Amino acid sequence: MRWAPLVGAIVDSAYLIVKYMASGSFKHVWIALDLHHRHRPQQRQHNHHQPQQHNNNTNNNNTDNNNHLGANGVRIAAKALLTCTGLKRLGLSYNEPGVEPALADLLRAHPALVSVELVEAIDRHLPSRAKDDIGRALTENKAKTLGFLHCDTFVLGQETRSLMWPREASTSDAVLLAGVLVTNTVLTTFNIAAGATLANTARSALGEALLNNPGSRVAFCNDFGLAPSVDNCEFDLSRTELKDVEPFRLLAGCLRGNRTLTHVKLNNLRIELIETLAQALRANDKLEELDDDLATVYQQGGPAPQPRIRWQAKGRLASQWAAWAAGKPVGGAKAALLPLGPSRRQRASLGWVGIVGIVEKCL
Image (cartoon, rainbow, N blue to C red; front, side):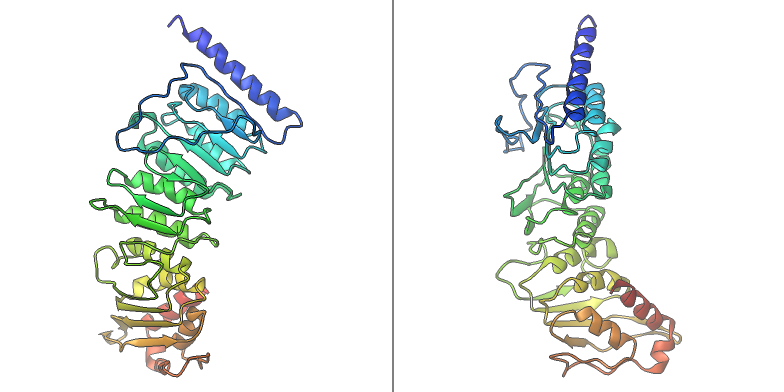
């Protein structure tokens, strides 16, 4: 307890330094606050990456790594750093923020941050609740500039093209990653390690981030058989990880960013997946053929199976799809195999009205 006043004074001094830098004419900030020893704590056994080493000659970074600020210190620093609008890179590793909400508030509101380091030695220093809050905060950030993050589970840096999802990763880690994927335009491959699992809620968070990122380049995933050399793929949408909307979003997100696939075959497509699929097709101008079967369309007389539908139209297949569902004439460079539109009875049924409304809303 006798050290508390001294530590408090140092943290207050750090706050004054940050405020001074923010109030001047400095566009970028460099701050190093060593409140404890310089020896880095031992990391978790599964983490084989070291936090990014900063160059002291640059002036657009803030490195508060390994200062053990604690929740109170992080709160003071985070509130002060909100006024440093030119800050690009922030290092806050080994500062034990816990669930301090000011850190999430900083990442939700900062207009210029590009990358952040949040590595901690043990879970309680950055628990699942904190990861959830930070991930959602990044998703809600209107500036959408932060596309790189280094934490204890993964490293997504400026040169990271491929990311392997580890066995020890949690759903909260996926929410945290999703907060970065909504902005990142560098990553192209998201693979899942042997023995690793990805819950439906995690797949949903990641997929939604990819679907909402207009510049996303994530196109390949070993879980779906998507690789740079693959241009023709078939998916069974009755699989557990694909049959519901939540897990299907991850596949849709990969289809949105994919620029190598030209032919896709979807088996057991259900009406519940149409809206998400339309989002993926809207942004993919490379797909030439989509072969699908609407497993069941609910008509007034009960469920009725529909024939397999093959779409062959160069680019923007969603437009062709919506036109066909609405019973309108459909043209295109390769429209020879497009089916006739649905009958008047089908269009009048609740099922067809739902399909047309859903798809047109997504275009």
